[in-house]
Length: 204
Picture 1 (cartoon, one colour):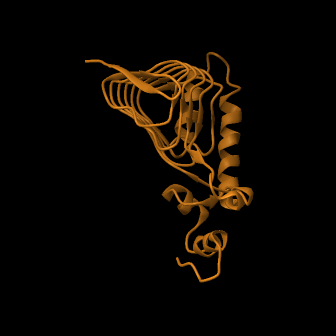
Picture 2: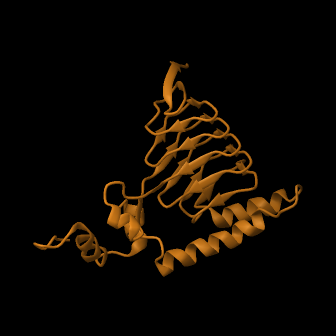
């Protein structure tokens, strides 16, 4: 990677992107193009599985679990996701054992999303790894984006309607209040809530 004299930032990005696949760049946190044919094909394959998952009948528990195991990077024993579920790739989501994800989760897994054991996730929670350039208007207009991983610790409770932003880690045994927007890491053993989410008190 290099920046030739007289070339702007956008040109530097074009030169550097040739050294790695768009998928490699996406997973490393570098700027990448989501319209790359390989990534588009992966998202479409994911959507086809989700189309089936989201139209299963209420008593199709075994079918749902089979679809989730095909879709996700890993799904621990006793874990469950309720439809309607939406994600980008699925394969970059790992979920531990005995975790419950309530209705209408959205997980944009352009970077890895790791959810621990014994986690309770409320309805309509959003785990969003996707980022777009803020200061570089030309790069954003040209369709460049990036992503940063999210991690949800063991035995956490993420309340209904919570939005977890890119790059955030929620520590073990913590509780995130309903409707919170989590923009920074949350330590272990706390109750946190608000927009932006802040620690309210410690818990054992």
